[in-house]
Image 1 (cartoon, rainbow, N blue to C red):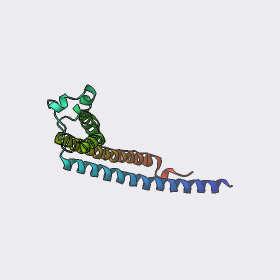
Image 2 (cartoon, one colour):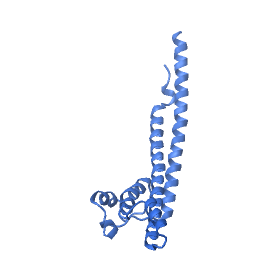
Image 3 (cartoon, rainbow, N blue to C red):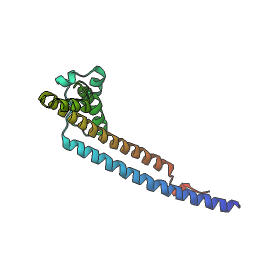
Image 4 (cartoon, one colour):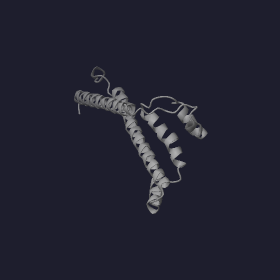
Length: 167
C-alpha cells in the first residue's frame, strides 16, 4: 500500500471514529441529564426529609449508620446517593429491629389471624421493605446516569476535533 493511500485511510478512519465518539458522547450526556432530572424530580416530589440529629430514630442508629446519615441531616432527598444512604443506613436498620423479614412476619400473621399486632407489624415491614426497594432503584438509575456522564466525558476526550486528524 502506498503511503498516500494509507494516510487517506487513516484520516477517514479517524474522522469516522471522532464522529462516532461525538455522537455517542452526546447521547450519553443526554442520558445522564434525563436520568438525573427524573430521579431528582421523583424524589423531590416524595418530600422525604432526612431526620435531624436530635431525632430519637436518628439517635438509635449505630455509629456507622449515624455518620452516613449525618451528612444529610435535615435535608430534602433529591439524589440517588441520598436515596441509597436513607435506604441502607436508616430504613434497613429500623427494619432489622422489627423481628423478621416481611416473608417471615407475613407467614406468622397468616398462622395467627387474630393477632392484630403481628398483622400490623407485617404491614409495616412490607411498607418499609417496599420503600427501601424503591429508593435503591432510584439509586441504581442515578448511578447509571453518573456512568453515562463519565462515558460522555471519555468520548469527548477520545474524539479529537477533525482538524487534529490526518498527516
